[in-house]
Image (tube, helix red, strand yellow):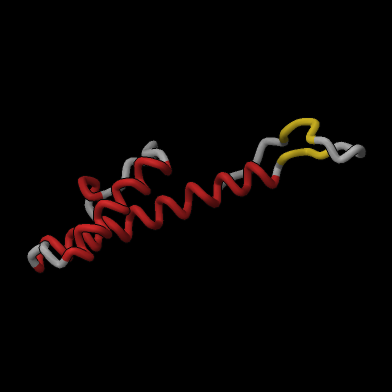
Length: 82
C-alpha cells in the first residue's frame, strides 16, 4: 500500500464511516466500472480497518474509567495503546 492510498491517522471515525457509506452505496449501485470498483473496494477495506481501530481505542478508553466503591465514575486511568 502506498502512502497516497493510506487513510490519514487523524481521520475521525465519523468522517471515515461517512466515506465508507458513500463507497458502499456506489458499489451497490453497480454503476462503477470494474477498475473503479476495485479501487473503491480497496479504499473501503482500509477505511473499515481504520474504523475498527478507532472503535477499539474508544473501547479501551471506556474500559479505563475508574469506578469508586459507590459505583460512580471517579476518574480515568491513562490507557496503554500499542
